[in-house]
Image (cartoon, rainbow, N blue to C red; front, side, top):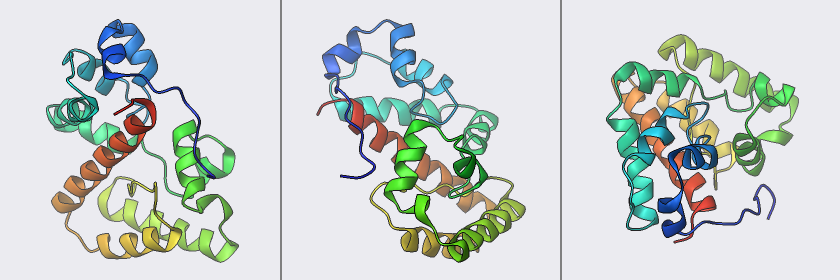
Length: 177
């Protein structure tokens, strides 16, 4: 299937057996440009299963100070933005955006995404975050148009919820059930 990657999945026992450095090396990119999340999650081991591992990443994020959570949100690229055009996305983001059709937008669609990204950042001061795996560009555009009317607190919480969905998708790709 397009956009998927073939990775040897680790068992939870193998995850628990990694040194902290190996853990961060293997999972430091789960949270976009924020290896501190993996560092915190490594300290919460051992995990009983993959669900507990995912919960460990979520707890690492939720227990972090607000400024760290905000920095993690701001580390995310715009969807179909300039970083994608330049090829500056992480491997995971590249695959996820391509899988949602964001790598093959028409000029009009790209302009719409650019306008929405700019409007959203002006309104909230953060990039629009949407866990795009399994979504279409139309679903993403509909979410953009709905969420632009949220207040900041609702949108900050929604963005964090989407980050946690991204954690889930990326961990499911790397750790066996």
